[in-house]
Structure formats: structure tokens, C-alpha cells
Image (spheres, rainbow, N blue to C red):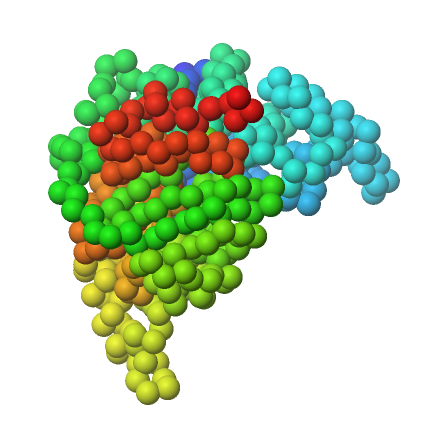
Length: 495
């Protein structure tokens, strides 16, 4: 008997059919991977399963019995738990309080703290996680927060666990740990639905894979019977060639020069340059200081010492406003938290960095605003019904294009892309790569921060490697390979 059967699930939004008669099956003890492009309907289907949004039609059966519920709390009582890509943890509460949030053991209206910590320790013990349940969540690493989310699911006796992009921010070592936890839970009979854009993970952890496209289920296959290319073809509806689009590199003069940049206890003596029309990669292990250097260049967290030159002229940047005025833009890795205002429209987000473009005298011209935003939507092929669509309704890849449109409007000379394809499907990745190439072809200098080595090798003219706040080496595109990059990324600085 199947653990879960979702039958002919349909969901409409205004002007959009998000799910079109989608059926999905999960067996006990199975890791069932769910893949598709951004906007394919994966998250919507799982939110229906988790009780976060109602379905318009269709049925859900758990262990052969039809289940009707209307909230995540009711879904949890049926053994369904979902770990979202953005963790639902309270940072100022302890690990134990987060695991049993709203369900803490009480006596005469008072929390029984000893029992709370014991039960949390027991839930963490099931994962072999040596995390002190009294620690504040704000002090945990991303990987430890992931474990707390899984422990929270175990504490409600979940039979069905949905993991939405669980590997997006994990290091390779942390990913191995998480895979071992997932496999152990599956061996214990739990059914796990695993959503990921990293297709290589499917072959490491999945038993079956379901592919979705445009709100429809395309197929379900045994992982051992399908290739990566077949999965991609079903995801995008066509064959994708040249995952990293080629371009003719003719870089100009040095656009950005960073000289001996330092920030106390964060990074030290960082120097490099980026020429106009060039894409330079900045890579290294998580925690190497890559993002911190980018934020210093952008003025978000200014450096304590060192110098930044733009087109050979020393500039002083202490705030993002000053960076933007100098022609420097930052596409942050946290597009939802820092790159966009989710409660605003596509038009408002695109105009945000340069509202002067739509001024009529001292006033904003609404017609000009819509015209500018519509031009960028067409130029970047942004999939939105109209420019007044709320950004939070868009897929991750489409949101990333809106961020790019915002910075292109500013006529930036220098763009910093921090993990530009994180959480983005393979088809949208290629579109973003092509857009980056097109921007570079116009003479814009690009600094690309990435954790994905194939991306660094496929897109960058040079690769700069960091380790513990220091630059450990620079490789040309011709000499760079994964082995050399990893050697520099793990270099013993003491030696």
C-alpha cells in the first residue's frame, strides 16, 4: 500500500493554473525526488499536501484513507511535515523551544523545562546530532538549523517529510551528513519527498523521480532507469545544449581594482581586479569571506582599510547609496530578504534603484514607470502576467531576473553577482548565464561569487579563490579545474 496518494490535484490563481490534475504517489521508506523548472508547480503541490494552501479539486489519501484537512496543524496530526527552503525557526528561542514551539510540555500552566530539554535531546538523538537543546537558534550554523527542522518534524511523529531545497546553503561536508540522516529516516519507514534543483543529488539519494512542467506532471521514473539529460529534457520540454553559453572575450581596461582591502576578523589584505567586459569568479568554501568582500565593495559593510579604484580613480564607498551613485550594483545571494521587496510589484522593484528614470519634473510619472518596467520585462523575458504582479507570486528564477532588471536600469559599470543561480532550475540558469554574457558584452565588469565549481569553470574568464578571509590564488580560465580550485580553497594558511 502507498503511504501517500495525491489524485488529480488542481489549483488556480488569478490568470494562472498552478496545478493541472497532478497525481503523486509516495511509498513507505522511499526518497521520492520532485523536480521541475521554477514555476513548474512543485512547491504549490507540496504546500497543498502540507495544508498551507487549499486545493480547488482532487483528493489526498494517506495509507489508503482519504484525508481532508485545512491547515498545517491538521496536516501535522496526520503525520505530514514540511521543511521549507526558508527555515521557520525563531532565532531568539532555544533549540528545544523551536522543536516544541506551541507544544511545550506544561504543568499548571507552566512549562516543564527539564522535560522539554529531555524530549528535545531525544529528538536530536534520533539524528545523532550533538546539539545542546538549550542553545539559541541564532548561534547555529545553517546545517545545524536544518537538523533542528528535521528534529521538529520527528517530534510530531511525521510519516511523510517534505524537504524543499534542503541543500541550497550547505557545504559538501554538511550535505554528506544530511544525506546520511535522510537515508536513515527512509530505512526506518518514513516517506521523504525531496525537492532539489541540483540534479546530481537525485542519483545519490532518490529511488524515484517525478518531473513537473507548467503545473502538470510529466512523468514518474525509477532513478536507476533515467539519465540526467532525460530529466532535463522532460523538465524544459526541449533539449538543452551548451549549459554554459560560449562567448568571445575581449575585455577592456581595468574597471575595478581592489587593493589590500581588510575588515577586522573578517578578511585581510584582499587584492584583485576586474576588467570591463570580463566575468571574474570569486569562490571558496562557505565562510571563506567571499560575500563579506562583496558587501565591503558595495558599502554594505565597509572595509577598515585598503583602497577601491573604479576606472583607475580611487573612490570612497561607505554606503550602498554611494556605491550605486558610482555605478556599482550588488545582486545579493538573499534575493528575497535583501534583493527584493516581496510585498511590492514587479514595476516597483525594477524602478527601486533608479526612480529618477521615471521622473516628470519633481513627480513620478506612472505611465513612464510602467513603460520602463515593461521594456525590462520584454528585454529579460521575465515571466509575469503584467508589471503590476506582486513579486512574491513569481518563481525564484523569475525573481532573480527582476533583481537583474533593477540593476541594468541603473546603467551600472560594475555588477557583483552573489550566488546568482542558487535555488534556480537548470533552464533558468542558462537564461541567467546568457543575460550575464550579454551584459558583459556591453562592457560591464562582473564579479561572480559562486559555490558551484562547474559554474565557476563554465562562466568565468578568471577565478579568484579565498580561504578564511585571504586570497589564496588566482587561476586563468584556461588553467582552472576543480582540483586546482579545491587545492587553493583548502590551503593551509599556517603553512
